[in-house]
Length: 224
Image (tube, rainbow, N blue to C red):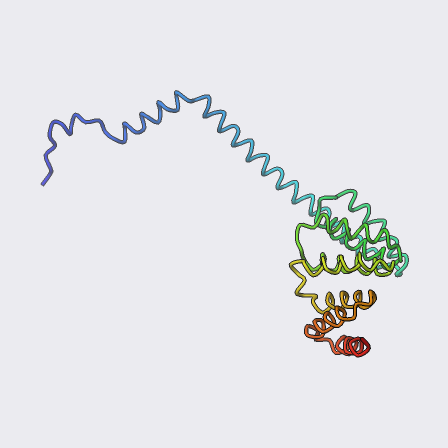
């Protein structure tokens, strides 16, 4: 049975019609602000999309450049390959300084300079890599260890110890505990602090799974 509508109900405005009428009134009243806001939103979207596409293309080109450097270096002998790689990696960093490929390039440059005995250049490259690295991954740990080794070669034991300790404070330090502890122990031994040297050699011994390193650490402990 159909419900009978009273006079009051029939005279009341339809709620949906009233809602749309209010929306229309609001739009007409604030037309300029709405157009301006919409334009700004569209502009931001276009700029963000453009920047994303630019960044993708930038990284793609940098990665291609980096892979080409590795491939070309591999075709040459060790000396020529190293020299060519240094030149090309410097070009990569200059051309794509903000790319991930350039970040890896800085680390690889450090290794190449280290291998060539160009210690100052190696230190500069490792420090640049650490400076630009947003993470605390394995390469950061290895960079600190390389810096420590370079200072150790210069007989600057206090500075070497600082770098080895910085390696221990990184998030990925747990993957290199045996190496880090051994390095620190060796520095304390060179500084004639036998107590500290023995402490860190024992820590290294508890972490290593390498039979050769185990033998070397035990030998060091035996002479302390």
